[in-house]
Amino acid sequence: MEKIVNLCKRRGLVFPTSDIYGGLGSTWDYGPAGVELKRNIKEAWWRDIVQSRNDVIGLDSAILQHPRTWEASGHLQNFTDPLVDCKGCKQRFRADQVNGRRCPECGGELTEARQFNLMFRTFIGPVEDTASTIYLRPETAQGIFSNFANVIDTQRVKLPFGVAQTGKSFRNEITPGNFIFRTREFEQMEMEFFVRPNTDEELKWFEYWVQARFQWYVKYGINPAHLRLRPHAQDELSHYSRGTTDIEYLYPFGWGELEGIARRGSFDLDQHAKFSGKDLSYFDEESKSRVRPWVIEPAAGVDRAMLAFLLDAYDEDVVEGEERIVLRLDPRLAPIKVAVFPLLRKGGQPEKADKVREMLQRHFTVAYDQAGSIGRRYRRMDEIGTPFAVTIDHQTMQDDTVTLRDRDSTEQVRIPIAGLVNTLIERIGWHC
Image 1: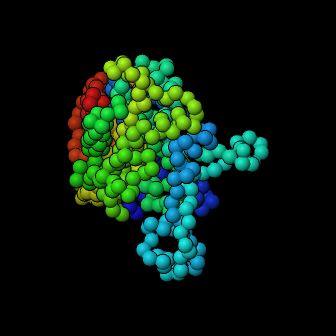
Image 2 (image 1 turned 60 degrees about the vertical axis):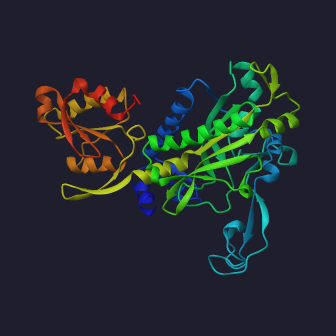
Image 3 (image 1 turned 45 degrees about the horizontal axis):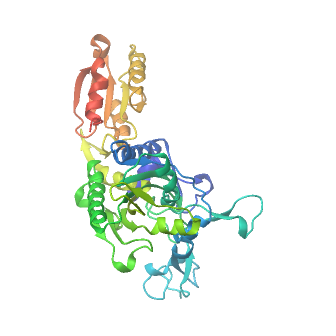
């Protein structure tokens, strides 16, 4: 993990938040390369979950919701962790992650456990009182459920159908850590898939989404040996869950949740109908009756997915007798798709390289570098996972061909500039 953290800061992937002030615990900023990788992960998810399907539509609900939302959802009552304090060093821990009554850091005595609500509380309007209390959302899902009537009133949807969204969520975690694995501010990719209230249909779609989401990570480069499915035991199910299976990844600190797929039943629609007094049913043409659909929810964390992709892509090898660090990211996820290098800073090569860069920028994220030896420039791009590099050299000035270097094999081929865009589209795999 330490190698990844160092690489992320050195190459502009992830920085500690408020770094000049000493940072802020478990909060992170995404640098120029990191924001591109994160955006590519979200776009890949959106493309596969929404744009390539006929049964899922999108939504973008607000971070601030009416406070009754969290009463209805059960978060005010149930979204808690048991908290203990060390009487000696004053550190705080989750009681369910501590063995015995002694502090894991100093050995001091721990206090009795008390329940701690994980939602961030703030106030809306100029007066800070109970009536103006509001919360930062701890999940994006409730914005989908509270918009259920709006969706079926305005969209031609037919069961089964899904509503998906990405966005920020906030949880006042007691013990965040492990880099971007567990943070207090994070981004989610969630989808609520509504099915008829029928156990057979529910289980069919639940198994479908468990397998589909597992294979999604494999599709974008995760070694399947580093993934596993873990069904939740009955005593660890969330208050809304009829059954949950986690997709776990083998992080350096052990197996940890990457994504959860939950059977939420009609819990959320039932609760919001009860608390709002609104009709949150759906008229099913097939049965000619009004039903309250059940829900299958695949919920993934963008930050955790990014960490898993980085860890699985990280590699060290030797090229031409020199050690290198390389991120073997799937080209579709890579922050920069292609780098453009003039071999020399003279002979018209920089000007030619500028024209090639302008051509490529209409289609890809492109880096340009003319500083240092060509080998050093390759290494810099390898470290952020850039899959291809184009070099303009003496021959380019004669016949309008360039060398195209592959990040993983380091092999180079000569191709015409006129065919460069189509070659890169094919190699990146955007047709997949």
